[in-house]
Length: 111
Image (spheres, rainbow, N blue to C red):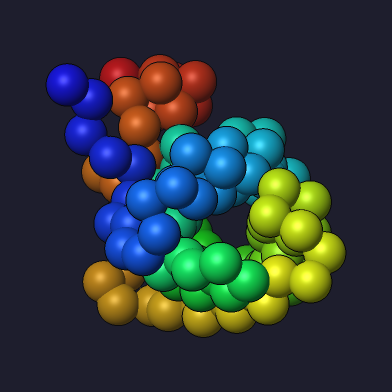
């Protein structure tokens, strides 16, 4: 069984759509998806509302707002335009390459 890419709580009926939406968001600097990079620290989902805990590879990431906007847009596309999306940027624990999926590490040549 494959481990879950991030902690999820809330409505189980939304899990697949939320995960698929997040997997479509790409970090433009790394050219890899934010889920594969391990940037999603957790999701809480209920009908009409989703809260996502995100991190970046660095606190100085110049595209953090762009990524957050793309996360919000992807979730609204998947769950409905009226969905309230809250993005929480967090820095603990700090991101490290060990959070990446094996496929992402291989794509970066770190395997």
